[in-house]
Image (spheres, one colour):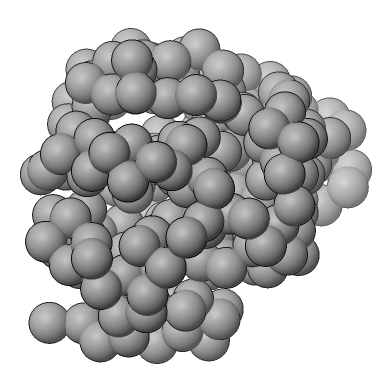
Length: 227
């Protein structure tokens, strides 16, 4: 049995990946960068410190990288945050985790204020023991910093934890922190990409993980298939 389950939020607990991609796409175009929605979407799961360098040269980052990220943040909060909805059975899954005696943490590349709003939207704020956002770490995912912050707060080792996330960046960050990962497909990344990132098991979403809880890594087992 793991001692803590560390959940990603965007694309894992709440349906927000497309909305983030739209905000980044609009921000890139506004500042003169021809970045499509699809290109932006493929980078969601990283924080701005990792996403912006993927598209901007070092000179462009120095010139307007900060302004671009701040504009993106304002645009997301005003136009898209009100549209974010939770995935099905998220409170049920987290309550089942707590009932099993496993602590619950969230580790997200989101900003701290956005993370707090997501947890309220998902109706799980009162179920969380520890949170870690991009502001708690020097680097966002796929760097391991956010997961390492959670482990330090709980005084645990990577082997004591299981991560749940929707992107290869979650799995890479968790692996670098010594943590096994359960992948979910509800964020839009493929099963192949999650398995290539070494997710131990993959589920369609929180509802299916809840339904198969007793056969999953969260219960000390391993359920490898997707249906």
